[in-house]
Figure (cartoon, rainbow, N blue to C red):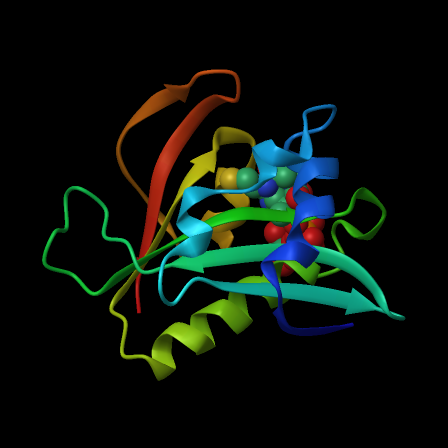
Length: 144
Ligand SMILES: CC(C)(COP(=O)(O)OP(=O)(O)OC[C@H]1O[C@@H](n2cnc3c(N)ncnc32)[C@H](O)[C@@H]1OP(=O)(O)O)[C@@H](O)C(=O)NCCC(=O)NCCS
């Protein structure tokens, strides 16, 4: 398995399959994708795109002065879960951010994925909250 940068267009089918199943492809195109610095990573096994994550230079509301980056649309295909693809995607993204002297990395984590992020050094900030149609989330962050 290897991780490399991919285009936003390559992320759309995986976002659709895992994060927006059954919804139109247009729901997988985020406004943030057009921000300067928006960057996308893909994990590959034998030329199959197995997982994705996208990262944007956006601060969380509680850290307006940080050099913070938000990641979104973290997903790995079901048949590779537990094989380290998610961890490798986060590691590649953090390396990219460290090269840019970013000091904070964060996400709106689904509760079901929050222990995955916790294992990778992310901590919960604030209270659990609901995102309509998706479910309970935690803001999770890591100082780089
Ligand atoms: C969450 C997700 C990205 C994890 O990807 P993955 O490829 O299975 O992760 P890895 O194999 O790299 O796992 C790394 C470690 O986290 C653990 N882990 C993975 N998912 C976990 C979860 N949901 N809860 C707790 N631990 C988890 C693994 O067991 C592994 O532990 P280890 O290092 O002790 O062996 C994947 O399950 C997924 O795409 N879920 C559906 C979409 C989703 O919820 N995305 C997150 C949106 S916020």
